[in-house]
Structures are given as C-alpha cells and as structure tokens.
Length: 518
Image 1: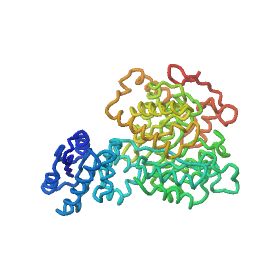
Image 2: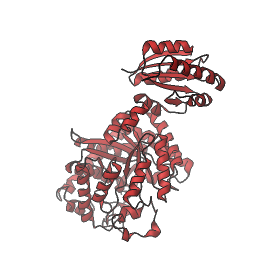
Image 3: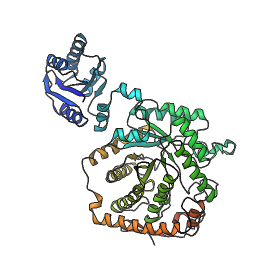
Image 4: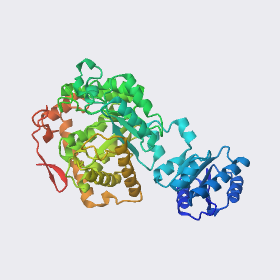
C-alpha cells in the first residue's frame, strides 16, 4: 500500500483542501498520515523521516511572501536531510502561492484549486514518470479500466488546414483533459484517399482536415504524443474501408474502428457503392479489424436514427451491428448511444430506448466479447445558439450518465454553427466533466420508473418481431438478407425518401416522447 504524508505548513490554518485531498487518497488506496494545518516545517520533516511516505503533499495559502520564505526553507531542509530521493512531492495553494511553488525544483504537481476530482485521482494513481514510461494506457480496454469509475472523454477535430489541425491536436493533448482524439478527415480523404485523382480540390477541407499522405497521418499522431498521451482514432472513410482499417492501425494504433453495416452506399449516397457491395465490403473491413485485434463500433443504429427512423428500428439495427461484429471475430465492441435523436424525444423515452438497445446487445457478452458503452450529444438536437447549446450539452450528458457509459463523446457547444477548435472543445469537456462528477454522487435508476421499464420491454418485444421478419429472409451475415429487408421496407426511415435505395415510405411521429411509426 502506498503512503502519503499531508499537511499545511507554517501559520496556514486552512484545512479543507488537505482534508479533501486526504479523502481522495484514501479512496485510491493510500495509507494517509494527515498532519492537519499550521504544521511547523520541522514537524513535517520529522514525519517524512519516520513514516517514509511515497508522496508528500504540502499546502500553503496565505500570501506570496510567506510562501517564498517557508517553501524555500522546506526545499533546503529536504535536500539537507536527503528526503527527496525516490519520493514524490505535490503542492496545493492559491494562484499566487502556486506560482512560488512552481519556481522551486521540488514539486512534481501543483494544484491551485481549479482542478477537478478526476485530474486529482489520475495524479494519485501514477507519477508523471510512471505515466511517461507507459505513455498512459494505450489500448481502449486498459484505458477504460484504468480511469474507472470515470468515463473516457472523446472529441473529434478536423479543421480546414492540416497545419491548423496539428496545432489544435497538440493543445488537446497538452490539456490532459482528453482521453481520445478522433481525427476527422475531409470528405475528399474519406471518399478518395486511395484514388486521389478523383478528388475535387475545390472541396479540400470540406467537413474535416485535408489529409492526403501517410506523413500527414503520422504528423497528426505525433502531435498527440504529449500531455496525457490520448488514444487516437479516425473516421473510417466511405470507400476502401478495409484499407483504411490497416492504415489507421499501423500509423495511429487506432483506438477503435467505426464501420457501418449498410451505410456509405446508395442507401445514403455517401459513396457510389451499391448497397449489396457496400455491405459485403463493410463486413470484410470489420473482419479485418478483428484480425488485427482492434475494437470495433458498427455505427449503424444512430445513422438510422439520424434519418428519423422509429425507435424499434434503431434498437433492431443496433443489435444486428453487434451480432455481426461478434460473428466476424470482434472481441471488444463499442456501442454508441446518440441521445435525443431524433429531436423531440423525452429524456425518459430516450433512456428507455438506449436501455433496451444495451440490454439486447449485452446478451452477446461472454469471455470473448466485451461491450463498451458510449454516449454522445444528439447532433440534430444541438441548438445553434451557443448558450442554449451549452445547457443542452450538460443536460444530455447528465441524464445520459444513468446509462453508465464507459466513454463520453463530447460534441462542443458551437458545432451547430462552426467547427470547434481546442478552446471550445476543452470548455465543453470541462462542463461535461462537472456533470459527470455530480452524476457519480448518485442519480435515480431509470428502470425504477415504470414508464421507462415498460417502454424498454415493449421495444425489446417489438424488436424481436422485426428481427424474426428479417431472419425469415435469410442469415444476417449474408448481404442479400439486409438488402431485401431494406427493399421490402422492413428497415426504413422517412429521411431516405426520394434519393435512396430504401423505400423512404414510412412516416414517423414523436408522440409522448417516443418516435413511433405513424
């Protein structure tokens, strides 16, 4: 067991900060020797000698001049008595006393009170040297387990120019607030990276960063190799998905690959691939990712929801995506839950839909197949007004915490109007982190609400019936089965009308907070 000695030095009688730090240290498994406040330097030094702690945490909050005198004396005595070797030292104080502490070559970490509980706990778990050696956990499973009970924080970044994107990636990593950076290539890259002669260069930078070469990918990855060494991943591309899987794995150590089952086809016109060809190629890409040991997300169900499908269709397509991923050898699976999609859902019925989705998917879990839950703000429900969007972001992530996510995909408050840079992303992350901390103190169980539990059961019952209709057409792993289900309208959505291989004949309506077929 690690040991910490903590106390406020000199005449400083403030005790709240060291008490809170002591509580967190105990919860992280430390034996705590809390000397309290107004501790003479000599007493602190003698205690260090006697207790031989792994970590010494000292505080001083009175003024700059007092901090200068007492901390210089403390440093001198620590060196004189050879108490520094093999031991970590941390300081907590006000902004001005922290400035003094930062000038001394003693303290590994300095806390000025602006840090949240998550940052403090991560510091207590490992020293900077230890973290640097392992560059923080670099696989999804290890990172989730290491940061528990806090969810990993993810955001995407892709600006008009590569150089600007690189600079912003550096800022995100250096902030140590992000666990996962998702690179967003522009549409030219997603669709024509392997056939650059087909690119319309007038569209460079449209929808993301203009990534054109392996060196571009590597520069973006190297920009993230600082701070807390976040995991990196990229959008999968809309053509040549299997080649993208290999590329991203080799250069980015891709945190996971997000591959649809039916999309990026003539279903949504995001590529020119016929639906049957796209399904076959997408399944091969998932199988390739599995063979490389990569986690996979089949970003299938929320794509249907973004086209205003009914709740049952979203639940069914979520299950199909997870089922096929497991059949193709995926060991670690990410299920994204895009909240408030389509807009107009009530929080109760939104939770019921997601609970039904996860209950069904998690029946697939076993020793060889682990499911990670990820929540994100609904893209269609984000207001253009940035103040309203901030409220929307915090509210959705607050009630989404009832779903016990492993990952939170933050969508910055400005995204309905403009692409976010590091400043807006980090502001949004800080807001979400506060919502997470508040929620972890305890929120109501949505299944204790009969309306929620009954709706979840209803969705599962109706979902089973739809799945039976699809399976009657053939095995789920055969592309022709899903093609036929779409052509017959078993799987359909209103926003596909008029341009898709899908019928687009179904009509849906929001009623009592649910998205229903009319």
